[in-house]
Length: 320
Ligand code: HPA
Ligand code: ZN
Image 1: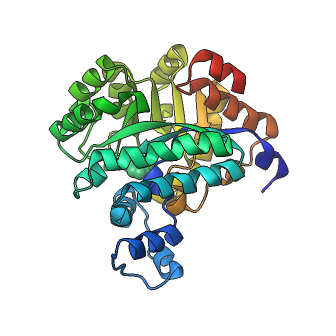
Image 2 (image 1 turned 180 degrees about the vertical axis):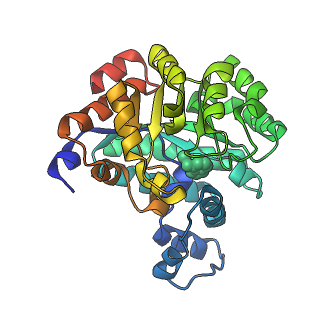
């Protein structure tokens, strides 16, 4: 790890908390909850992480989170990430969580959010790492289930800064969730969504997200380069992209570093993030490292990230 990257004050905006579940904690939670895992060791578990597409990753990802059952489990998960964030000089993070990945297997919404929230409060006071939560809906479930989850979240609105959309994108376009996004906007949530790399309809999905839904930013979104007019539009609107090079390398044929370079050169507010670091074996510093960009570009990527955070202007300015 270069000293420059280690020391750079960082901001992370595309991080699934369930994707930070390291094998060691998975074993600990399985023991705590009396769950048998189909692996005998951390090495055996990691050896099963041989995904080469979004669906093959998602299968392992959802299986893995079955060990998360109680409020302390979610606390330990988030605290584990926030401690690593501290080690990498991440000063601020906006953290995705997937409530439906838990409610769909019987874990109540409030168990999930209370555990995460308590970790965020402790991390701010004990580690001086600040974070906010973004609630993601699973796009391969019905829109009605997303809407019900949105309504279930309303008592906890003060703890959630915005909404996102993740999981399997094939056949699940942004338009499917138009009503959910409209209601979320009315409730005061900020809006982002995944437009994963190299999907069947990547550019059309980005267009729907930007033009029809009116998102505040886009997660991944590198394929926007295929439509220069859309690039102009996000430049005009100041919409940022949360890119994840190491993740790209797992779910597609490349880390898409050339594309990220191009977006940066065009002046797009592109940012670098880790996505699911426990599965892709790289936190944000490692994602910055693989780019091999000059120091000034790495600084610009962090300026972009702090600029597009969902923090009040004066708080943002203190980081910049
Ligand atoms: N894409 C879609 N769904 C996900 C991802 C991702 O990068 N990570 C966790 N769930
Ligand atoms: Zn993601």
